[in-house]
Image 1 (cartoon, rainbow, N blue to C red):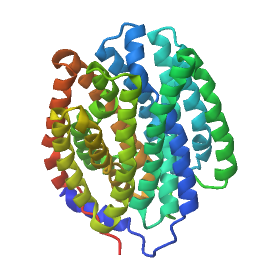
Image 2 (cartoon, rainbow, N blue to C red; image 1 turned 90 degrees about the vertical axis):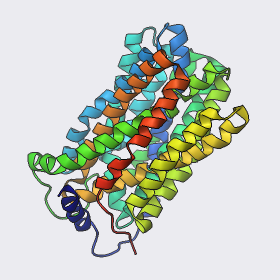
Image 3 (cartoon, rainbow, N blue to C red; image 1 turned 45 degrees about the vertical axis):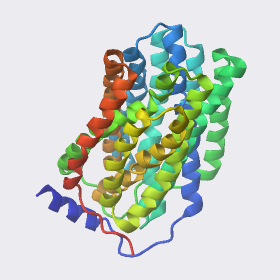
Length: 400
């Protein structure tokens, strides 16, 4: 019953005519995502230093991710507003505020100050991740998967560069030198003001959005399904992103090697997100999701069993497969609720960020109990067990 309703919503979202894909503007928003997520990528490489300097447990370190993600609870509200008014200035200002919050981590004297700075960055992150994907979808027209792929590539590029930038800054200037990196975010916001000030932040379409109560009721079954998928997948993604540098350093790697490993994983994800989104337009969303969902946990088991020589090549494959589904899911969410794209996107992103943050704490606790290797192994198994949920997803009509 739920699948039939989803199919109707999905088919209603398919444009009757093909409009031109606005490549330049989509790439501009992807660049904004790259700058923003470069700063957001500072946390994982710095966790070992915070653990050492402030005597934190792995669970406390994982809790820092919650402070960064907690403001995502505001995303449905941001989405509701974005369905009615343009919030493009949220996108323009986000690099400055995220840069400020993440760069000040280097001079935070206490755990409480770390939490405060992460909350500032988190609010900025919540706003850009709600509003900008809807702007991208507007500019992508019929090629929604391709547009989401470009948007997510920006994020992956930022996450690739972020660990390398923060490692270089710490090596050159120490943690106390990180606040100078804020200047990059300020410059990015100035450039974005020039490039994006005439781009609407509202979703496309002429139909008025549903009232928020009616919209949320219509989204309930779909979002419940997405929540189950997010939980299953987040165990593995939390292990491979938040705790990958810590895992490698526990096995003898230094800061540069562990940060480079995270960069390799994220770099491979650039190709995965770009190709996954575009292929889902042509082959259907479900087919791409099934391939990624089955192959990624199997690759993680091989990664854990392999020696040091094979780890970097396996991280390339892991990054490509693990991150290929992100634009596919975002496209599926937006096309399922065409009258309330921003609210649906905000609801999905809030659900994703909150559940992933909670799972990150659980993975940290599992690492304290089982060790990092045991936590990684269990996380891959749980992700694989979530695959049957894909049977209930709506079927996407491939583009011509």
